Length: 485
Ligand SMILES: [Zn+2]
Image 1 (cartoon, rainbow, N blue to C red):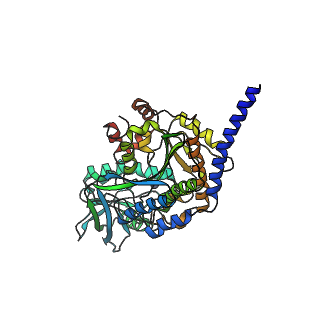
Image 2: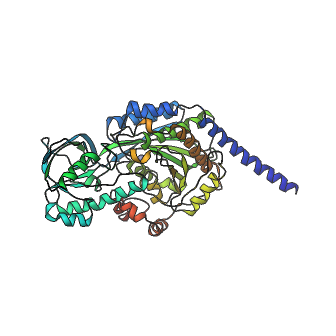
Image 3: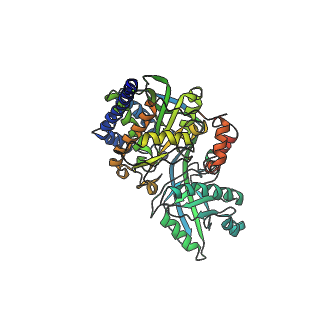
């Protein structure tokens, strides 16, 4: 009995010792921190930062400096981007039955045109389905095809948009079109961009046209009148080049060789200033690391804070990390991505791994002061957890209330004023608590999955379909170029 009491006392004491560390960090993060100033600098002063741009380089040095000023050991870690693609300027003119200048922007990886532009007939491609292209028949060949889209309202719509683009672009290539014009899925004259589905292999000129302008074109075409399009796409293309992730680290006090890694991506599109995607969560990573140093919080396992790069173009920075640190991945306990904006966190996606779900529930259930959390055990492709997942490392993505993330996603309107600053503070406390939970609970062990386990995960979920809608990564996995061998 005596012994039992003694053990319980030790257990209670250890638990409360852990809690007090976590509570101290939560309090620190909810208190006055420079997270808003950091985010303002990153968005308003540095601005939109596509990988390979000058602003992106500035953001790398800025992130490094922020870690160093906070006393966090940090470094720039080099990796190779397969090629450069940056938009200089895109413009268009409609002629024929009507004359006007629609607002346009090039899709990433769009082919450029001669500086005098590329001219062609504009034809109605409906929603770009098999039936639509069949109806167009030979009328698609050598012409610009304009594709109608649904207005984007939520994240599901976003995944659908990516998946649809793969089929639309396959059909467009088959039909021999001159170029593709997507109606903007955002309201009024708001522009945004995403990647051409064939990524660096894309050879077609492709633009997004403001919704109201595209609707005007379609009304005229559907009135049996004809239109011509002149498009000038001025892009900068280049060979492979070096880019950098920024990795900060706080070494573990008991198991320094074991790593919990959390990250957000530095790069954004040039449209807008990458505030919700993903500047706010970059600022969060820096704020958590800074408060841990300031409050002298020593995790038992090592915590790495990753500011990934090259994410938007194909998750290149985090892929490079998993290759570079492959020999250490057995010791990576958990990899978390925070990349769904600044709506309040509602829980975590646990990657189709019941063991990760269980340990995450164990950590989030007691966090009742910070909210009620529902963790969802599905695997998701689309951010920097991906290569960790395909290497068998336990991984999480923070799930958020959508707030205003979807309409502004990859759009001109993704600016500082759209960030939910109050929720961002709360989110930083939630992410910090989960991170410390994984770093300090030495009973949590998430053994790395074998290739066979990962293949099983792919078979038993919709991972194949998700991967096929993302820039050729399915074939990289199948060919053994990506993920665990
Ligand atoms: Zn993102």
